[in-house]
Amino acid sequence: MQIIKINATHPEPLKIRIAANVIRSGGLVAFPTETVYGLGAAVLDAAAVREIFKVKKRPFTDPLIVHIAAKQDYFSLADETSKLAERFMERFWPGPLTLIAKKSSIVPEIVTAGLNTVAIRMPAHKIALSLIKTVGMPVAAPSANLFGRPSPTTAQHVSDDFADKLELIIDGGGTTIGVESTVLDLTAIPPQILRPGGITREEIEETIGGKVTLFSAQKHGNLSGKTSVPSPGMMNTHYAPRAKLIFVEGDCTSVVRKVQKLADSFGQQGKKVVIMAMDESISNYNGFSVRSFGKRDDPKSCAYNLFSVLRSIDKEETDIIIAESVVSDGLGLAVVDRLRKAATAIF
Ligand code: AMP
Ligand code: MG
Image 1 (cartoon, rainbow, N blue to C red):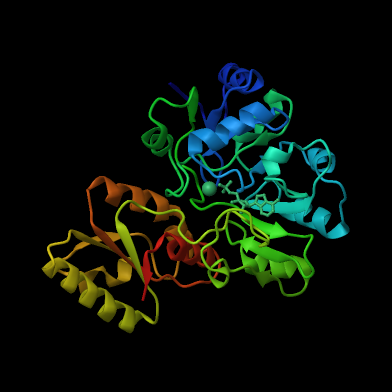
Image 2 (cartoon, protein in one colour):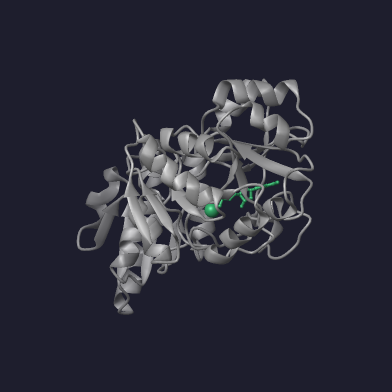
């Protein structure tokens, strides 16, 4: 396996060409985007796309997002378009928004897990854009983590998950957003957010001039295999650290009380406990092992730190992580979604 460092603001063309050639010849390349690292293959190369599923241990029922470098590629991947889709592209691309559209016949079935829709996004990252451009076709890329694990926000996270199983990892430094893109289904009426992410619900509703619905995997139970739900990849246990994660929701005072009680009781059972808390409440947990993952009034900071904190606590052989709830405004909605899906218990 090779890791090449590429400058995130001025990607060196020669190095991009090396990476693009790996993809063009049927290989996989891990690369940074503004959300998390992706694991890419040429979209029309069904065998290479199959390899993504194998390496990630991702079920073939979980469709991939197709990454593009120019808006016109949307029109070759999607079978139809709408004024609304164009409004979203205009406002948010390149950026952390994935649009679901009816798929055109050129998109291999394996990419969309047999669905008649396709997920498309244009990432706002110079390395990702110049890589896709140099490959000369869109790149199918899920997050570059083992299936079910916290997503990778650094090249080190990618290599921690895959060791030498990947031909090439591009190291373009840490990602800036830290959680994945928002997945918005424009084929639903009204449009539905299938996964909250880097573009907020508030921004989407403002663009539509009305409400969107929010898909909740919880309501559908533990999804596995082929289902009739709109987004087969949205399973309950996802993004999960190796330690058991307990997620505590509620108002500040009751959260702190519950966290203290849980930490006490697991500590007495001889478990190694780490608390993930907001900066503002750390002082409530004297005597416990605590990690900050952001500021209460700044959900962006929580999104930015979430996966890297989960991964670093895991490295310390922790038994139990107890995470405080986050305000679910703005990017907080995506953070709460990931913590709920990563949790083995919610209080
Ligand atoms: P990942 O790239 O690992 O962040 O996951 C992408 C997610 O996008 C999948 O888990 C799906 O839930 C969702 N997705 C991709 N394609 C579609 C589609 N055609 N319809 C609905 N959801 C999709
Ligand atoms: Mg993923």
